[in-house]
Amino acid sequence: MKKKIFVFLFDGFSDWEISYLTPEINKSERFDLVYFSENGKPLISMGGLQIKPTISLNELNYKEIDMLILPGGTAWEKGENTSIEELTKRVFESGIPIAAICAATTYLGQLGFLNELKHTSNDLNYLKGAAPKYCGDEKYQNSLAVTDKNIITANGIASIEFAKEIFKAIGLYSDDNIEKWFQLFKNGIWSE
Image 1 (tube, rainbow, N blue to C red):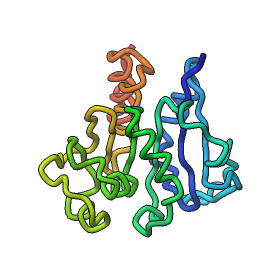
Image 2: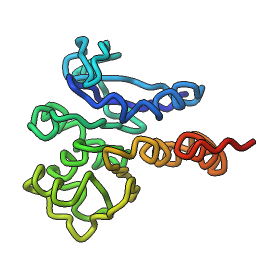
Image 3: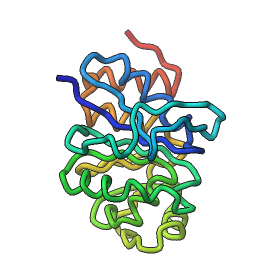
Image 4: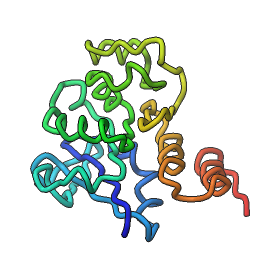
C-alpha cells in the first residue's frame, strides 16, 4: 500500500515552496500526494496557479496521513487557516511527521509544537511576532531547514533544503541520492 503525503492548500499559498518536493514524490510509486483544502473547491496560489484540490478537509481521515506538509502564505500570519487546527493537533499527537515552511512555521509555533523541539523559521523575531503564544526561543536554530523528531521546519528561502529534509524523513531515495539531488538543484553540480 502506498504511503500518503497530504499537502494543505489555501488561497494564496506559496506555490514555489513545494515546487521542488512535489514532482519528486509524485514520480515515486511508493507514495501518493493528496492535495486538500478546507472545502475542496478550486483555489488560486500566490503565483496565480488555479488548482483543484483532491479532497476537502471534511473528507480526510487523519489515520491515512503519513506526512502533513504545510506551505507558507500570508493566510497563516492573518490567522485564516484555523480550520485545520484539530487535524494538525491529532497528527502531531500521533507522532506523524509535519513539515512547515515560511509562515506555516508560525502556525506550529502558535500551537506550541515548537516549544520543546529544535526548529527554524524566517527569523526568530518574525516567529515571535506572528505567533504570540510561541515560547521556544531556546530551541530556535538559525538554519535554513531543521528536523527534530516529527517536525520539519524551514525558512521561506529554503525550498530545496525543505525538500531534502522531507525526502530524508520519508526515505524517498538513499542518503547518497538525496545528496546528489540536493547538489544538482542547489549548486548545479551533476554527478553520476
